[in-house]
Image 1 (tube, rainbow, N blue to C red):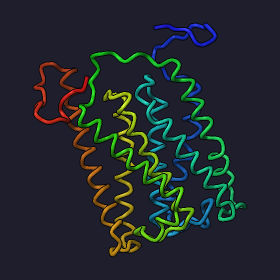
Image 2 (cartoon, rainbow, N blue to C red):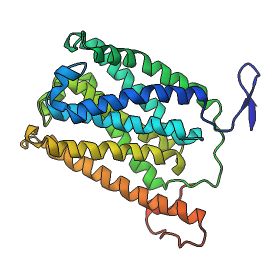
Image 3 (cartoon, helix red, strand yellow):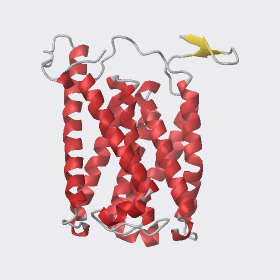
Image 4 (cartoon, rainbow, N blue to C red):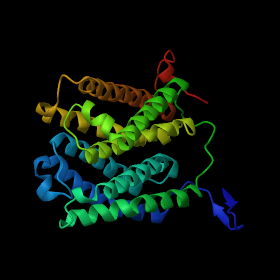
Length: 299
């Protein structure tokens, strides 16, 4: 399918992933993987190995979880042929990286300016938001019109994913804008900088809002995978860092139960929608029951 841009130049809207988008992903992946290895594998040594000393280890490993989820996302960008499969992850990355860039400027003195990783950190977060946003703008010009018969989430599933994403975004923004309100309530020891960093991680939940504009399973599937990777790593990190938690703070139990509920419901949705997708591919396979909202397609 072809259309014309604002200058009247024909644009082929075939939903392809542009070469420039793949190159950007190729550049970003090594930095995300390197940071994950340092922060998740050696969380007690961030003062020596990372751009700033992160204490306690739970904060370090939570940030690492976001990095591995991001690395997986950009690996998929390299391999994916269809823009709609990956498009939902770009603006959340812009928000996350942009907030970390702002936090870096606000807490400039906390960082180890003489460490090579600080140069990498600052360069990434002062440039990545603009580069990723530019890639999103360029690639959306070739986005194809969705087909009417594509597998979609039910209305119930859309609202659940959307509301959870919105709540995560609100929590993240509160943590970033007003860390003084959150630090006393947080279940492990955090500083204003680490509170803002954790807030930026929660803001990645904005990805869930994509269901209100595009409820296709092909659009949501990768975002759900990234979320499951991140939440699983966060729960493992919580087990590793359990002495760092204050069990007398309500947020300790609320966060734990919330992450477990999110992971469990995400796995459930993944299984249901994968089975429905397979039943479409193989019409001889028995279809799943239509009795629950998550099993039904939204049109």
